[in-house]
Image (cartoon, rainbow, N blue to C red; front, side, top):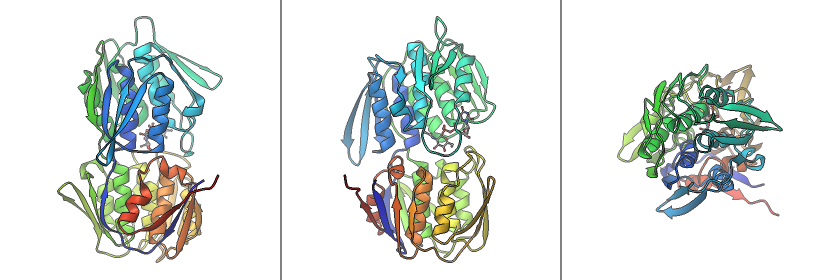
Length: 426
Ligand code: UD1
């Protein structure tokens, strides 16, 4: 397994191009299953999760063509022939977002079967909200030998009014896709409002769907008989943006994040400002700098968008570990999302976790150490801590980072970080 060796203490300066959003690209790729015509997606990041989704789609009989266009990739997903409706365990276990093929398969083929998903080890992540939504549209769900099968009624899925008991990004996306080809109107209430959902709806509407309200808590989908192809650029990655903004702040540097958008950051934006960081909108992106030295302490509670993103919690903890006082973080979205804490402690951080609440007593420096990545965002937290720490940090299990951060060591190296990948032998 590869590792990263990082020598900390260098202020980062320069420009980083923000990639297309992984969490937007994955559902967009699944949307292609709804049409016999090709969907051309521009600005797709080159990531392990995208390759896993490509393999999953190919296992269903879909063709996926990748071309390099400037510094990004364009994927053309063509689901003209769909000759398989089973998403196998070997692929699904690698990535929880695989569940997003189920809604489109059910809508287009009347049946879909998927192994129960895997993904990051951040607590129990059920799929009940997806399944009860499909049931409300008339589907029959059966569970057998680790696989979930969903079958549409004769005549296809029917529009329904579905009120989610709690907010789920994936369930909102899956149901929007399924409802696009259902008979009649579907109204989703208490829907997730993440910008990736609005991006998905823009693409589906370009394919001929009739969706209004995506990005708000109530989404209305008027089903149509069929969808066509489209060209769609994937939105910029707001979590990558936030992560590199912290890289600037934690190292006392200045970074221009090309292609980044402040309007995608929700409550993460004011949180940066409260720590003393400055984020300015400049032409073509965001300029991030830290004129204040150690960050001011913060109290953060993770919430669905536009609240503070759970996917930025670990990275903020690295910053606050060096804060000028006591910070508090409460994680409300996922249980078991503090796996970075013991690793940060090994670097000298003073953090105590009780239930869902972490208390972070800022220290004036962190010290490099051998640490282990445990999930995607926890890994980035450790990279950020290492960039600020005195001495050398070796981060193992880098494959977690490869799932979600495109060309991480190249991007950080170009702005002055001392970061090197050690490729495992054999
Ligand atoms: C998506 C993001 C992930 C992010 C998360 C929350 C993608 C590919 N991934 O994940 O990076 O951390 O949103 O912003 O976009 N839940 C249920 N039943 C369900 C579905 C979810 O109880 O059927 C629970 C989950 O266990 C979790 C919460 O709802 O506690 C939110 O999960 P959800 O919004 O569905 O996350 P994902 O779509 O999996």
